[in-house]
Length: 291
Image 1 (cartoon, rainbow, N blue to C red):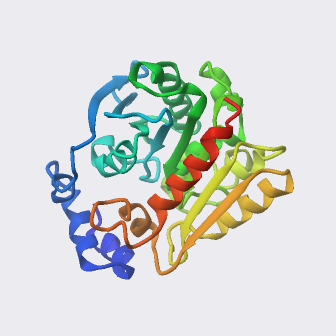
Image 2: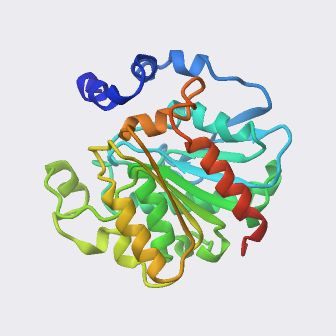
């Protein structure tokens, strides 16, 4: 992990955030040790496919309220592990939401669109098994940060992935994108060009597939994000609204690409309103889901 890059991303939030982020690089992180285990339990390594990367962790509330949230983390489609995100699981399972954090295959093992296909399979798996853990399959939300937000948004933008996995976009209650790249051509980084097999392919962009109304969405970003420019969320919101979709956009001042997801860590939730905004969106949307 590039420590200087992390520190530069963290410059707009307190030093504690940088310490916690650096600690998360180790298997036993300080950040994870600070997370409460009260009110939920974790079921690890549920397989939604045959590959070792096709597994998810399920954070099961002691008192579920029926809502279900699937989360895909970022890492440029090249890195990441579900074990790094217990704070996300706790943030929502402690509020009664059955929460899944999913691994998916990464480049160079796979290329576009395999990581989207994995995300669809994980979503279908959670929907199929939600009732077993107190969840309501009719109240399913998908979410992600950065590259994971791209994965989540592609499921909503292009319904073919969910259909191939045995579910349907009409069965998704809402979508939450956190600092996601949705309209990011042309590519200049050689690794991303390899991942998407080309530097200027509109068929790889979520915004390309918005051709009608989509499920309600919450798009969140930090105004100081220099990794994924805020225009991604702004342009996607405009296109969604042009087709009558219900879109809520939240911009957090002085917050960068890492800072926004770190604001779900205990002790850092005051740095943005992300957790509160996500809970408000879920609680408002769930009662009127199409399911």
